[in-house]
Image 1 (cartoon, rainbow, N blue to C red):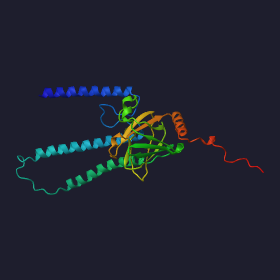
Image 2 (image 1 turned 180 degrees about the vertical axis):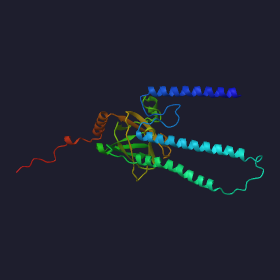
Image 3 (image 1 turned 45 degrees about the vertical axis):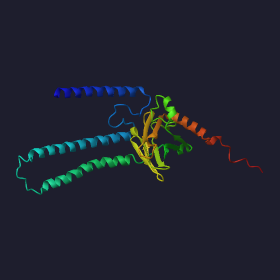
Image 4 (image 1 turned 120 degrees about the horizontal axis):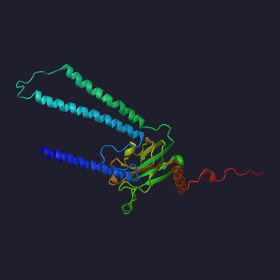
Length: 289
């Protein structure tokens, strides 16, 4: 039985390794960057400095909770062995222990302080943008996203999941249930301020690899920021249960070079009828006497 069990463990490990290798191979072939893959475990890859801080805090919490769990397990095993009824037929009459009571009060406080300091630092770090180069206003609707670009002429685009009829014609950079008709486009290596609100109910603008999750609420503005160094297409989803089409409200962000972003902005401004200031006739006609 023991040999069979170990054989199953080894066989399962080999299958898992093959699965991870297959997932890595698929990721290498796909043109998108931030998309889930088979056999993934834990957090997605970090594509921003903010997400790296989130992953670092997660690793710290994992170490702390593992040590606590092992300590409690060891304590339970010791109590089961040391104070078994056959070893202690007469129960102890001890009711108080000053050292233990101080210890189990002070130690949890110290653990919470160790957790709280990096947690608050991370909250403040990801709260507001410092020296943002541009702003994108994100508005959640039932059930699509609207992106406004106030620094580029205040045009807006609507981002909806691809219709069921179009899902059979998905391109390699359009994963099922995540692809949209219009992606949010931002330049790489640029601090982008995200202003979030909602038009009807609460939504959650979340992109896994960016480390950002902003709950957008009607009548309120929430702020965050992203700075993505690598070009590509990144995906996320609404993380608030906002209604019956909640699961069909993906987030797609296309990160491009600054030159390509300027071209995209020019196309959108032209489509929206926003002409540059140089093409407007002079407002000061020549005065005649």
